[in-house]
Amino acid sequence: MQFGIMSVSDITTDPTTGRTPSEAERIKAQVTIAKHAEDVGLDVYAIGEHHNPPFFSSSPTTLLGYIAAETKTLLLSTSTTLITTNDPVKIAEDYAMLQHLADGRVDLMMGRGNTGPVYPWFGKDIRQGIPLAIENYALLRRLWDEEEVTWQGKFRTPLRGFTATPRPLDGVPPFVWHGSIRSPEIAEQAAYYGDGFLHNNIFWPMSHTKRMIALYRQRFEHYGHGKAEHAIVGLGGQFYMARDSQVAKREFRPYFDNAPVYGHGPSMEDFTEQTPLTVGSPQEVIDRTLGFREHVGDYQRQMYLIDHAGLPLKTVLEQIDFLGEIVPVMRKEFDAMRPAGVPLAPTHESLVAARKAQANDDQAGEGEGGGEAGERAVDDVTGASFYEQQDSDAAAVANADKLIRQAEGE
Image 1: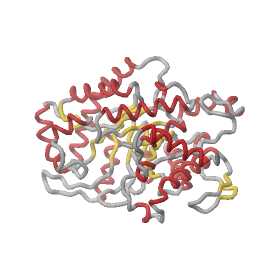
Image 2 (image 1 turned 30 degrees about the vertical axis):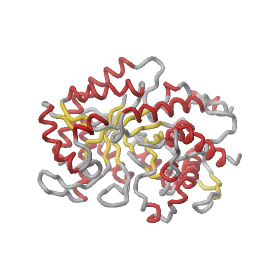
Image 3 (image 1 turned 90 degrees about the vertical axis):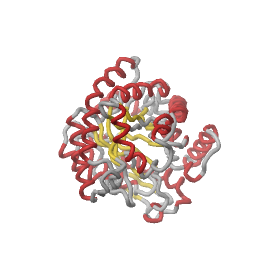
């Protein structure tokens, strides 16, 4: 089981002091946070992507490249890479470059973001969001998988004999997760490709998370990538810890009440009851996290949001210390409950080994879970429900399947 922390990169006033950190302070704090995460034994650090205030992370690969030079074991990821508005050529090249700098300690999470104005800022039409996502992700996969790409689409200039450089490290692209909070189409997308699905369940009840992950597992098996219980699942989460539960509640309450996302809404007590937010003792966080398995089955990655809402760096580092104390306990418990055959989270090393082991099958077009010979996965429905909200999971799956077939020219 991988455990890690993620940041949405907000710049928020500390409600207890009235002080707002500068952009420089917040950017440099991420390096300190990532290094400390590695020091206490965490596995993953992830940063989001935003192009508007009050956020600072407009260039995740720049930050992750710097962190790569300062760490040795930490896996570097994103909590969102915008597939709709980024040029897939730049995504392919930037993350391959990062792979080489980090010796393979890289994966990324695709998402559509939640800022509508970003589309015209990058010369895109929000009304074309679904076709953009389909085309961009299809091209990205080709750029990583093929040495020379000749391609023509709708939203960027054609490519003629183009080779993205550098090539992926060892010929293996970074593993891709697809992140979502509410969109069944994204679960379908991840399942179609056999990619990972991370449900960032920080705002929704576990009943919703359970439904989304069950859909992803079902469709993962449907598309021939393996058994449903072998699908690659990640969860988001958030906590605030203190040795005493009442101290934790007292300390975190002003940050909760004034947080940009959920502040001035439900009470902290209601929110902790209805979502995975845990404010309490280390044992309470252990118990709550271990309980996630009852809802979603065995899963591979647990990420926590703790750097947000104006919490000062000193407090964030203290929270990482608490997490470092309880991760060995949770890792041991999760590993003991994990049935034989349920895979661990993919790493560069495991992906290289798998590719070598299946080289003969791949050459014949019959790699396990790869579908029919010559079949090319071209679907990406990231963002579909942002524009075309479906009435049910069944309707979302049908809509996604229609988009796949259209993209394949059927």
